[in-house]
Image (cartoon, rainbow, N blue to C red):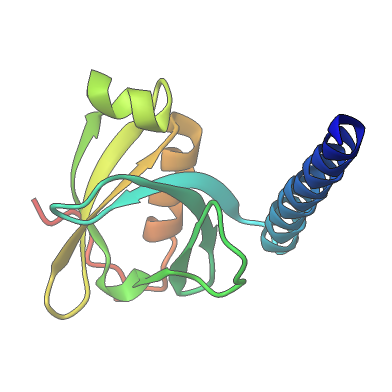
Length: 148
């Protein structure tokens, strides 16, 4: 009886291990598919009153697409149109935020859309420089610039 129980436990553990390996492989393949188009950076996102979510931001010609770090879909969870996106403030992450986001992250508060919804983006300094350059590189008349 004891040998049979150990044998069954080994199969359960092996099955669990296979599931973990497939999940990790799926996440890795999804990330490679997101990165293949170029213009992606690691980026945290937070709406007012919500917790930080870690993910990947991908730059398009006229929109910033944000994908959750852990997910199975290749469709973005958030899409921010460059035409209606403006940066209102910039700051360093607070110590409590650094625990979730990582060291050296900068946070920009942005307004977007017709309703001027607020969203915060957290990224490293190099990624922030790229983000601001992407905003400023919009065609003439398409970028509203700093709002505050």
